[in-house]
Image (cartoon, rainbow, N blue to C red; front, side, top):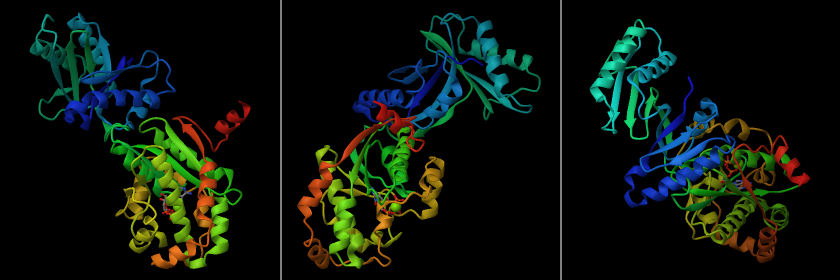
Length: 407
Ligand code: ATP
Ligand code: MG
């Protein structure tokens, strides 16, 4: 079946009244970025629907990519005929569509909507004409008006006659970029990509902040965090990836601070840096992949002492999820296999065997005073590097960085 376009029905944004125009524009922009590897597509975000005109692109991979974009309620691969298409043409197209879906025992109905009042047949005429033709042509196909397996939708519009018989569930949520901006503290672990996904689902445009500690962490660990970001870009388009050198801070903390407080103080400095970057980039919140009680740094007491470094909202979408629930989401968004690759994170390396689960704030502040905080923080900030990460990039296999070196 040669489809002419994918018709996209909007999700939650339809309820947003005056913001509707911005939402549709943003969804169009995101769709463009997500589908960047299909060069001949034409994306038309219109008031009531978005049309993705396929031209010569194959429908299946485009649908696969569209199914991830936040802000889409449902979508359908559609065949468009001319506005004056005859009943015979409509019948023939409907037959091909249903044949692609039909298995013995399946039921169907035809649902016609007519916007073009000049079209010679009314909706009943089209329903009957197409329905009768299909039952004649496909033996064993039965009509069921109430709960059909296949619904043949025919829309007779001013600019064409549209036919489809599949309605596929979209990713729901809000288009990324319509819910404000935040940063995400992105490790290479299982949790932070899932937290990023959840923030993005609510329309938040996320900049990734990743701390790395060469030579203690490998280039692969960095590439892995970038490739996780590539996966997340599939939900809403290009993402800024900010890498922050953390080696010197970790070495200094290790020298100056008692083992029990290493983790707490490292985490405070990470969050302090993340907060500074967040403000600098005009973002309004820091997201993390923390889940209450999961590890020592994620007790409610630790969170308080770590959180004390900033008054920005620190948002934790996974706060009350179990690890098994988080893993389930990680599998559905296809980040799990990357996350479990054994490249060490900067936190694991300098983590003492017994970090304090209930750190004391006064002691924390006292130990922290042993460090040249301002010097360390400004050195780290001076060393940040920012990269735009696109759908389809590939860092672990080296392609992106090799390419970058050639330029
Ligand atoms: P994750 O799977 O996200 O790594 P985790 O359960 O392993 O989470 P931790 O390693 O203690 O937990 O990290 C808690 C949170 O701190 C992470 O979810 C992430 O938001 C942030 N974080 C940890 N390491 C880094 C890093 N190298 N760069 C940026 N953020 C980090
Ligand atoms: Mg981790």
